[in-house]
Length: 118
Length: 97
Length: 111
Image 1 (cartoon, each protein chain N blue to C red):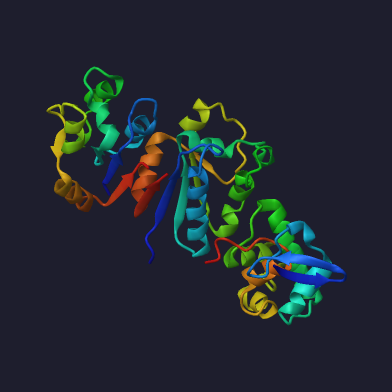
Image 2 (image 1 turned 135 degrees about the vertical axis):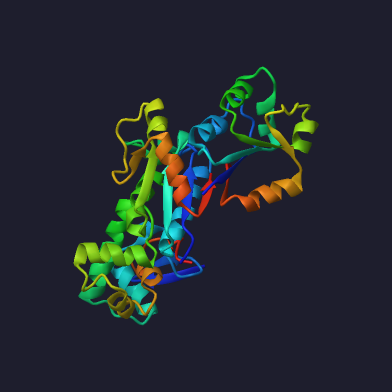
C-alpha cells in the first residue's frame, strides 16, 4: 500500500511558482493512483477565488487546471475556513473542496503518512 | 501520530508561524531553524505567542547563536544530530517551505 | 523544422510530432497526423478526439491516461471509457497519441 501524501498549498496563485508546483505534485500523484490530498491554507485559498482571468497575465489557467483534480482521482480537497474568511472569499471556484476549521486540519495532517507544505 | 513541524522563515511579515501554531496538535513539536529562530527575539509578538502557548519547542542552536538570539529556558537548543533524531522519532516531518 | 504537409500548407511540429501552434488543428490535420502513425480515423477515434478537445477547453491541460479514461467513461459510458477500448484505438498509448491527434499539448503528467 502506497503511503498517503497531503500537499498543503499556501502560496497565492499569480505571484510565483509555488501554487503551480503544489498542483503539479498532486496531479502527478493522482495520475499514479497514489492516495493524495490537497489542502489550501493561508494565501493558498486565493487560488480558489471565482472569476480569475489567467489571460490577463498571459499565464496558464491555474483555476481551470484545479477543476481537473477530481478527474485525476484526487477527491480529498480541503481549504482552511479561517484563511478564506480572513481574505473575504465567499465564492469559491472548486465545488469539491471542503472547508475545515483549524482543529480539523490538525486531525487531517494526522491522518496522512507524509506532508509537504509549499 | 505526532508531527515535527519545521520552520525556517522569519516570523516577521510571514504567516507560517501563526498558521503552524493554529494547526499544531497536542503531541506535535515545533523546530525553529534559519531565520525562524528570530521568533525567539525577546519582547516581540512571535516571542510572546510562543511564550504563552508553550508548545514542545526546539531551536537549532547554531542558527540562533549566529543571529544573537537567546534561547529561553522553555525552548530546547539542539544541534544537527539531535535534529536528525527528532525527525526520526516523529511519525512525519512537515517542513513549511 | 519538423513539419507536416496538409494540402498546400506546411504545419510546424515539435520533435515529438505535436503541433507547435494549437490553432493549426483541423480535421484534415488530424487525419494527416494519424496517417503518420498508420492510423485511419474511424468515428470511434473521432469521438475520443472531440472529447479530448472538450477536456482541454474545460481544464486547460491534456489528461494523463487515468483522467482520460475517467472522463471518457463519464461522457461516453463505461463501454468506451476503459483502457482496453482506448488502447486498441490508439496503439496502447491513448493519452499521448490521442492528445497528439487532437492537437493538444503533450500531457505533462504522463510520465
